[in-house]
Length: 334
Ligand code: GLN
Image 1 (tube, helix red, strand yellow):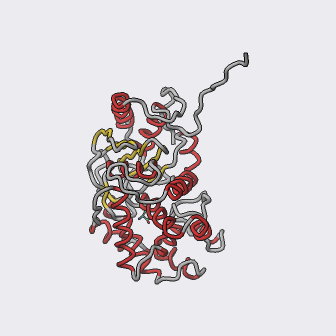
Image 2 (cartoon, rainbow, N blue to C red):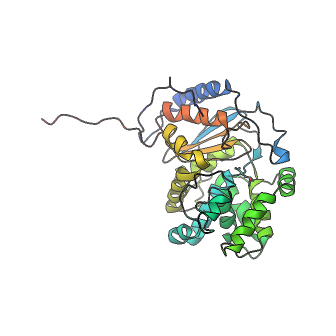
Image 3 (cartoon, helix red, strand yellow):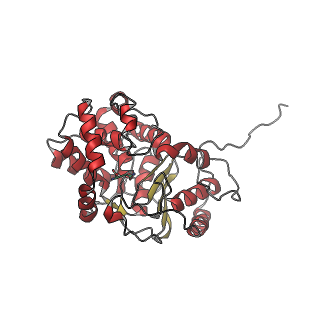
């Protein structure tokens, strides 16, 4: 999709955000700019999401000192959906370590939609990455816990530590997706047939669907992103949630696959790790600087929030966040 940011000057990435008043001003500019866009459509394959208000729009940046800069509906809650995949993957990596995480779910983009079955078949049943449904189901299956209930509580507790507050389940979204979950059930059974998950596939789908139905606001997501930006320490609570190595590995995987088959375009325009969800959330991480999160339900064809992409692209440029943007330090030799 066209991001409409050609007029925003690209600043080089430095180690620091500008001063707070400048960040506040650019948040307001990015919000106003993206709010003028009304393209996209609200997801309707999960019936409970179809009634979302397309005019809701929240934007939040939380820096690595825990300072929040926000605009619009940044406190409105919505279901985290696929954004949970990044944080559950981080919890798994913290549990099993770098090598085993890599062997279990892989780190390469599928180039195919998030709920693709073809991607599994093309790779001998080995999920290619944890940011799409097949890899996410395999990840959720490996979260420690004696049974499905215990695994769910581990996930709920872990995501709550990332957010710095207790996150609750949206029961209506959970029930609605469970009733329309044939595709995820099929993916889990396919993974079982390849020996990639050993638990009851129906239980794995149940825990995964609960994890996707966790309620967050854009502010919560920005804190969660800031935790990954801050070497795994939540900058609001001061709690270490995962190791610095796990934060790094999670961001690498988000960079390659967080925006599904559009991850390359996202990287080209924004140059940062990001993860989107079908309820309209996006979390984006500027390592060492902070987390940016947006909430706006209308999505593009790949399932990524339209206003969220525009606002984040604006901020990436104007705040100098793009990891690939440098300025020359060349000085002629004496
Ligand atoms: N719960 C959703 C699903 O599995 C999450 C997908 C998404 O956010 N892209 O279909």
